[in-house]
Image (cartoon, rainbow, N blue to C red; front, side, top):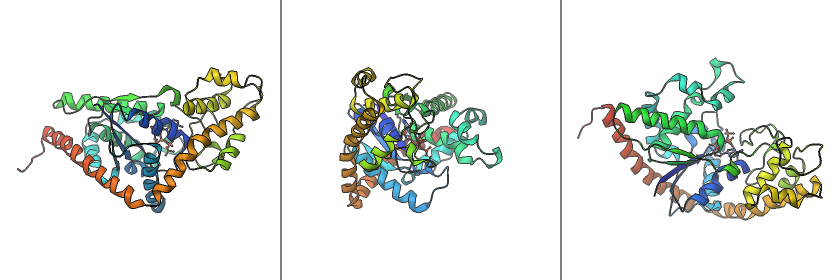
Length: 331
Ligand code: AQP
């Protein structure tokens, strides 16, 4: 089976965007591919994290993976900082990369546009190289990501090809896997902006995986729509379109079916339907997360075993990289 690699940064409490754009897809792909899923805490620290929050979120995200249906027997699940090979391989790739190609990354441009160049954290600039290491160390050929991450997988392909051409065929060439329906979930208050877990300025803009039913109802009822008043799936109505996308991602229905269903009805009824659809999806998952977190040792044991397996696989690739580069090795 081909290997798939993906992960989530513990930079905030995970949102419905992370769930629909990432975790839910992994669950449906896990029977087709050998899954390697990480809680990518090395990526999280590109922006300062409160140490206690970072710890707490890392284990919570692991619990969410398992509660959502990631099977720990079939997949390798681990915390990135437990596998030192990632940081080491990232350095080797850094020395095979160019400032120009990193400068072209849209996410870097977006995240750095608000600050003066001198104060943009180096980690934000360099993190696509760490992401490339994550993927290449496992020979992953399938990388399920949201649209916003496709460019980084393309960079990974370039780096892998460059390394293979300079030395020998060490790396498999990965491909991004974008699930079109859930490619991008937008902010409920500003539907031109991606729903993000670290964008906490307006909590009504995002739904957290662990939000209670009442909070979900409240946030959906406040979601920005428009003055047209008719449920339609069009770019002129980005707020309504986003809500339709959310629903379709969850229940697998077509946008046209939802439009038909609410043809004669107003936004109020539509929003109630959206909220209940989300609650029905998240409530069972939330109960499982709470149950799993009652016994952290069990999760820790799975993560320990995951790190052991990940370390074994990644060390082989790292050894190959080092050998090709020409590092002196002793026996
Ligand atoms: N709004 C979204 N719609 C669809 N997919 C999304 N993803 C994130 N937001 C959406 C997907 O979730 C995966 C994990 O993302 P990440 O934690 O590595 O970082 P991110 O993409 O930068 O997500 P956030 O929530 O926006 O984090 P912050 O705020 O820390 O930058 C990825 O596959 C991503 O595509």
